[in-house]
Image (tube, rainbow, N blue to C red; front, side, top):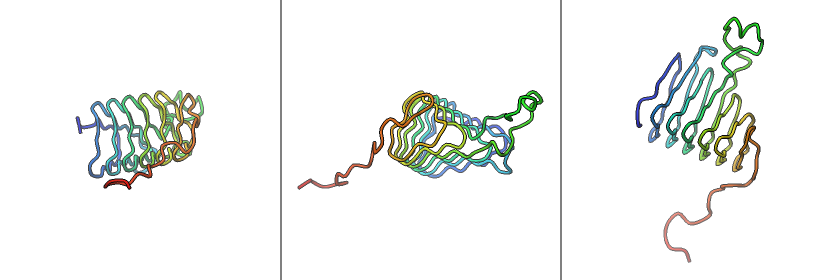
Length: 166
């Protein structure tokens, strides 16, 4: 851990072993759900200057990596209706949707991951993308909004883990 993250609001933080957290990381929460939860599983990594907004749940699974300058949010932070926004009413629970970054996924720098998104196992998100829908496992997605560019991308190698090849 480079520095302790800045934490604001009521959020339960579960961090497993061997994680890496860069500096200037913010974990922000608003009470929409009874217990907002942020989870980092083993060997997960978050780069510098990452902001995570949690109103319900954000999970970063094993060996997933989030590069620098990224934003992850499970809510828009405000209601849909303009009159309610003008009154500073919090987001309605129906508009809060968990985010999951599955194991071995890579999120490129400057990416924004929006509410309700699941990034599949081993998927790669190109730099500066805006992800508004699920990305299938082992896909390369990029753009604004992010679209799947390649499928069956980045699958695990079939090379032996040790010893000479015959």
